Image (cartoon, rainbow, N blue to C red; front, side):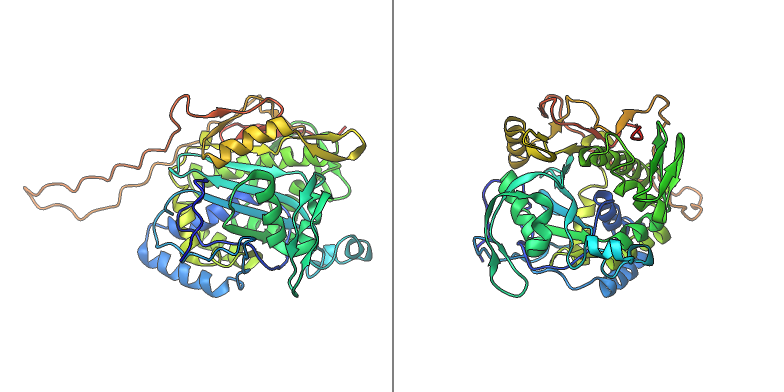
Length: 437
């Protein structure tokens, strides 16, 4: 079967293509699916892993069939084991209130967004071919883009548009349209995609046991119902959702500020997942995997547990400093302060690095709603407990303790230094969210 091979940073075998629709919503995107995915993969017991995979498979929603603009065929899902090569995975969050919890069912909410909703949060995860680094790019919802023609669920397609707000892609043509638009912007092939809803974010934050974030100045947002004081705050359930949704309560009240606030949350989530309890706790991992399967809508082959596990295994040995969260380079539109436009020179540097599968290094500041934590906490490094062995007979050789897999690192000087106009942070950087005064 024909398979696209453009030299781009995509796994050689991943199933492909963009698709029809489905619905869901915003944020808490990134490690949700990763750590989740890892959830099934890194359980230390084959029997527990087998049961988890089987039950997760039973609860996964039907996958969205992704259709490529060039008509290329799909490849079969990979075998179990770290995925061969790199990964490009898009995570979209819709603002739909349809079929959500009671808190989103008042008339104002339903009028704000129903049906498929808008992709108010969109993130692209790129895992390098050698699995040493990952980049998560957040695309502003208010970004003005050139949108391609997108297939509609009932047949036909939406027309192409040269100047359209990015967050309309989901309502115009479903998850497939979001993928096609990001592919056009970046030059990447994106074989995998997923959506998450408001209720999904709540389920995921509960499954992971909450996330502790640092708050530098009080955050009060009546729109999302959060009121947080200064200091370390444990976020879970509806409070976690309110935090990652908050726009008016953080930074300068803009969507760009909200993106950096989400990066504070995601980096804290990444540290929690990798630092010592989550990945080695079969019960908690299983809970996360089930929550992901139930609360997210996945593209066709991403819904295959084998694929989820394979992607997770590509991340398990990656250092936190090699996970970079950044905002797609953009500034306020001079002709419309409520919209943003891309910075072409900076975008071309980022896009070229992603397509060439090169690691990136930030040279700019953290985002508008974040500040460096003045009192960073030492993140513990998890040391696996040696598997107990039976008492050796006298004179018998002791069974050696397995050596932990070393953390994958990026070679010095190998990273592309991004222009300072691109803001963000690594998962290793400890930052605090600041409120909108």
